[in-house]
Image (cartoon, rainbow over all chains, first blue to last red):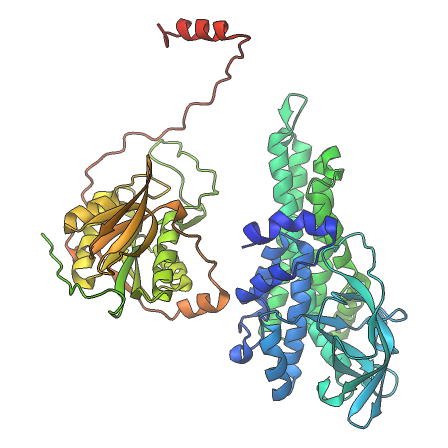
Length: 365
Length: 271
């Protein structure tokens, strides 16, 4: 599927900034729209490990598309796991086939890593919340239909945050300009602005004050998924470099005959395979309900996104001058995977989480 | 001889044809095949395998005929090693109802020939009594293009090979098959039961969806052995050696037609 429906279009989607909605509909037809949601309302009922394999495979054809697919899946899961029966019955039958698309809104201009400091307010007004504030760097904004917004219904800090679903044409919801980015061009990224935006309280996911916890739980899986996208980019880049090295000759020999370059490939393989094992381990820890899973997910995201970016970078170097040309794919894998080290929690935040887990286990072996 | 008598009722009115589809597990088309150092064959261990592309087309056709209500039941069969079960699961995931695996022990696998496969299929046809057998026209590993034809001969059934279209005949009592032949397209009517082999342009196979892949795990898969079917797998051929094709040599460019003719004369290709 990736070979036929995704990879051939990767460059075009990047160059022309096309958000490939038709391709997403096709992936949803294969069951990829709600991979780890329950089957009751159209989910595929599969595991996080299965999801990791799927995102990695699709990312070999287009990192950006796989990343959006993973964001959509994360939102669908948040509704599936925390929503009321009515909410699940209303939204999952639309999200699973991707006839409606979702976006995740946590980050704000003033709060990225310090996510709990978010300022978008949701003041109670009868049966409605009135939202005021703005979200930044929202993937898919403007093109998607449902926004899962983390907003402040209570006091400062994480416990005052709730998750509210806002539908696209709600009055008071508007979007900023489409950001111009280094990569992820196949996805619009924009500010999402709320100006006295009235949202029914029945759109709140989970009790008031539970939004931050839900957002963080969503991110655990999101981190495994984004790391899986990095794996796909690195895998494709490594294979591309290998092929190039058997074709390109200098000094009368194929590049593949130079030991220094062979060692590069070997090291890249070590980076890729070790990352892959860690990511799959993290996925399995989520599947098995391991209480230590969040730390493993952070560790996997930290390691895989950095190592895989390096693999793409090395692959680009192996292509020499040609690697720098936009006609060759490695530069796109490189640009698209660079942001994986930043979003879903910067790798610095990942380090914080892992360190906290290690020190917190003082006394364990 | 095996004779199968069916009620030649109007095909559209009946509960549909029963179709048997053959699937072979072969080395994936994208793999760079390597000859074994001892030149006894090609390297298969650790190499990616998948369903023969022409068989995928056959499976797809059977599933479409079910969807069009021309067929009632579609059964997939594979003659091969234990791993052929994966191939059958793919067929089930595409929409086939149940599968039969005729398991061949590894020792006899390399020497398996279309003559054996067609005999095994003929035996299965005796008990399954399909109205239509669809096979891929040839396997991409041996390119034999024999099994379908041999099967039809063994069963004394009509055959329509290299099909690019299958539909009911005008009176709905037969199948009208369009065949791709050297001169173009030939359309024939065959009575059922019949053997049809699929060619490239018959259809474009669907992707198996995740929900169908999960459902396929629960569909019935029966195992059989060649002994149970009473077919002897004694090889009729001996492979003496398998070698790489000769490395392509550089050609030469000529300046004029006279030079070309001269060179051809030199090589004794033209008098």
